[in-house]
Length: 113
Image (cartoon, rainbow, N blue to C red):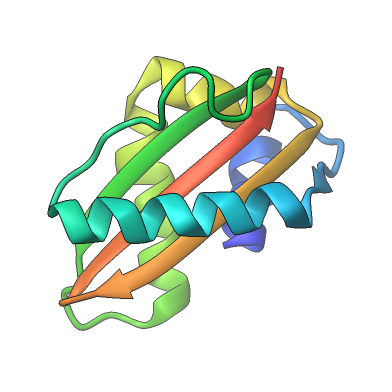
């Protein structure tokens, strides 16, 4: 996932490598589990980790290798939403969580505002 995000940033002329926040990544992963249990996507409440913008995505597994699935999540889902794309491009501190549940990949990315 990190390689896919960094490639996406380079393709959009953002050449600095982000700082990866491990604690916030843990919260992102927990949010992925919450979405999986709910069976759909939603943003965390606004009071949850103030100062971090959030992008969420879900995609059904179609038999491809994991790194290709990560790239498709970034390019085909996150990259097609202007607001979500800006989470990846505007922040120098990022966090992410990714889980697989019942053949669905759930992704949460947060960027420090």
